[in-house]
Length: 156
Image (cartoon, rainbow, N blue to C red):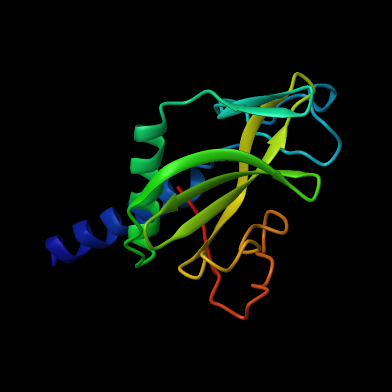
């Protein structure tokens, strides 16, 4: 009987602890952002856009390793090996490519031109003939022009 009461109290306490603790998402001041951007405090820039020219400023091998792990959690064994910051239709993207897959993430910039990853990633194995499997916004991918498969995933 005492074990049951102890177990019940422990479960209720754990449940209360998990639901009462909340993590606030601190935002960078609006004055430092371009309109429409929502970059969280502590989010690390991946590069910068200077005079319209993108430049990566990260450890590419480490970043690609994490990107591959994020995709693996979604059931995609990608082996991405090349990373670039590029512009497509007046929007910047971080694009990773491997032998079989291409994956991209939307980039937002602050007023200083620092580039941050925003939202989802979009991945396809049809990239030899497909350019549009990229985030349309923070929530959805552009549909593939060649009717190929474009998979939306959320990175950690």
